[in-house]
Image (cartoon, rainbow, N blue to C red; front, side, top):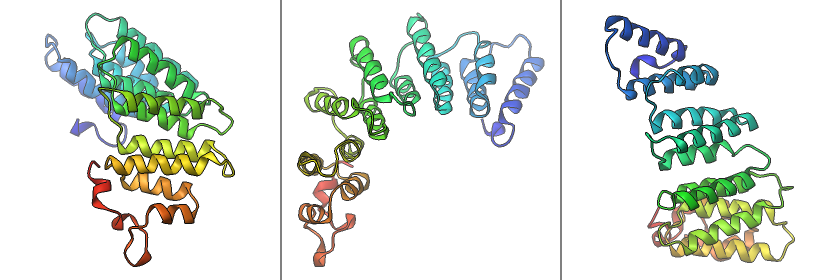
Length: 258
């Protein structure tokens, strides 16, 4: 992997594999070698990565994860759909397993699309049904991020985000993290108009929950500060020394789980 850094990493990767094969044609290369080469090709050229991927004799879950991640970097519907195709292929394989990383990469593939909240929700429901023990907080957090970044014209973003948050709140296996709260605060700020009476109460309620659970990272603090008007912000964060409110001044208890 160290040899393959920098410019023309994909070409270097192909060259290195040829050198290995020419030095010992009968050698059976470990899939980790193929994956290291695939990762470098994928970082430079997704189409060439697809070609190389098809030549790997025994693909692992990591092989699929690398290529799905490359599809996500395209930020297009084509890339998102290809990521889902690869996941289905992996899901149908008897030689591989579905892990948390590959689920995260499929969700990340959906982020830049117009209907990303709907796509993320649909994929999560599929995973919850088939692999309930593999779902992690980070998967829900990516779906919340999709809602936070969705265009304000996406009417489904807010209800989907609240539904996801309620699932986390009632889950026996998944616990909210600071990313959960910061993303949800961004969703509320983006998709509830400033003059809506619900806005201040919801923002304050979510921030207080984060504080109670010790999840007020700087990202949660900053999202709340940007989303609320100064009077609400200062009233909730009334612990600043000398009347000043800053992240360094808020109670350590609010940050204990970060």
